[in-house]
Amino acid sequence: MYPVKENLHRVLDALPEGVRLVAISKYHPAEYILAAYEEGQRLFGESHEQEIREKHAALPSDIEWHFIGHLQTNKVKYIVPYISMIEAVDSLKLLREIEKQAAKAGRVVKVLLELHIAEEDTKYGLTPEACRELLDAGEWRQMEHVQICGLMMMASNTDDEQQIVSEFRRAADFFDEVKAAYFYDDPQFCERSWGMSDDYQLAIRNHSTMVRVGTAIFGPRIY
Ligand SMILES: *Cc1c(COP(=O)(O)O)cnc(C)c1O
Picture 1 (cartoon, rainbow, N blue to C red):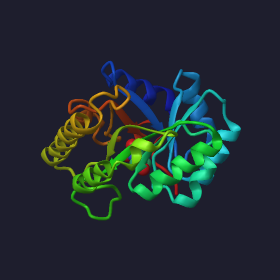
Picture 2: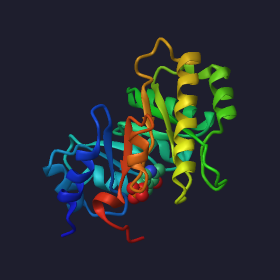
Picture 3: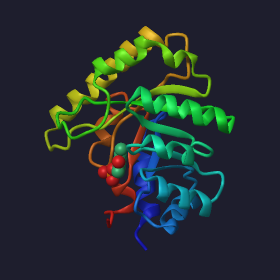
Picture 4: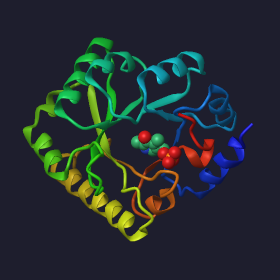
């Protein structure tokens, strides 16, 4: 068995108060999740609808699941009944579909807006400009079954720490701008989801409230 427990505690011990760990369990077996669960971890993240559905059905019901991947609108209905948070909302179309399905399911689903700051243009997400446009349009204010709780982003995949830090800082500054402009009276808009296995230590020094760590806990993924 991979040393999940030891790794989990190493990551948890590094987190300051107020920063939560989303243990990213995609492509890892249920027994790895249970090993972390036995140590008290309750928050897990997955990025494929089919896989999260199977794991949700098989694992303890007090696990809080975050969907962290790119979500197609036709898959929204499958995860909305049980998902705790959808982290990577990158279009108004997706937001509308979450609202529609959450209304049907009679729940309020928490979401984050995915910000595109990194240099690679292969990544999903809203540019700061597109994010402002979405919020300016205002339709989200009428959505009673969606709660926008903050921003998520992925830094560039690079060894250049300066660049990673500068991307985290830009994301943090943008969070402050959005908070002041649209969510100043909404205490639920408080989450900054950034930091993965290779950069979570930089992220927690740069205003992250939620790190998404997989490999450093569960080992390399076998695709
Ligand atoms: C897979 C994934 C992670 C975790 O990456 P690691 O490098 O394994 O920690 C974090 N965020 C997103 C969006 C992911 O898809």
